[in-house]
Image (cartoon, rainbow, N blue to C red; front, side, top):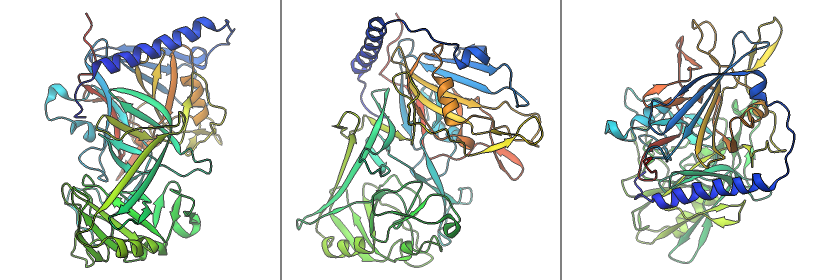
Length: 486
């Protein structure tokens, strides 16, 4: 991040968190606890402090039960009191482009001394294939990535919140001045034209008429999986979607998905400059012909509308007029607005796995992938897991649960746990975690310190295991937020 240093705020936040936790612990009566999941079946194998400000502790499962090998739990503590480090997030080269966590972290700074000291993959996302007529560089991945839930880097919003009937939005981690805070978040997006008209803005940086992963409002309808051939496709025939200038993938054209008719609408397209002035307004989206490759101009933004959204833009977005984009981010847990200034990053999720030291009652016990166990006819949950949290000292913590690296490529390296099992393991008192947010897992699971990757790849492409491309990453980087130890 490029925000000016604010060390006092970071230190104050950590001290307040530690004081509150200490006071709470002192005032509470002693409660007898049973053996934690960690103490019951895990062995501490290694404590690595070779990277300043970073402590990576590796635990190995002692008795793997039905598994052929014990799983690996890695806990990374970020300590701004021992080195000038602070937490942030990155979308890599540009929003929408497919990159691995290693590639995203390598692009944070061209100066080796300022390379991130630790990092993991970030929030939830969906991979989208490119339009047949989109032309990309020969070495580029032919997919774009769509965030699921709120995503913000340096105050720039890249995705709206998921919709919930209670209006609270979905879980996320607000990272500000190097410190994460886990809560529930809701976005409210509006357009206001210079003629006085206002309209809802549905989302940011994705195909109008077709959302992935979750509904964005009450008008979105789930497409049956036997029709879409994909999980979690939502459709809405009347939408307006904004594209930011750090979205470097060609903007959508009609006809991306033959199973979803709502996004076939040629629609209407509007170009805004840095002052919100309408510099162009025309029929069609993405340039029309197969040869057209439209990208957002530097410093500007583009709006695409379909159905009634296109009709509103035709009427109110005339060249020379202005369209003000209103973006409000609300922390619904504390009922407060979070100003979207350059100090703010956000990574989104569906689930908070620890809240005030406990596993939330409402946390589901989900497992998306399973595989054969050691005994014939049995299966294990193989979802690798990743989490971002804070500990009793107010320090940021990164965590991963994966399998061990296998000897050959004949079997997957992946081996994880159900969501609740992962949460219960993180809740072990030995780790001292207070809050934790589940990040994208499975093939996305990546943990790095310095330039070393400590998690095995689990996506197999052309017979070779690789780490998955991700939409964003969370990292601890050199900053002015920390303090050197005296």
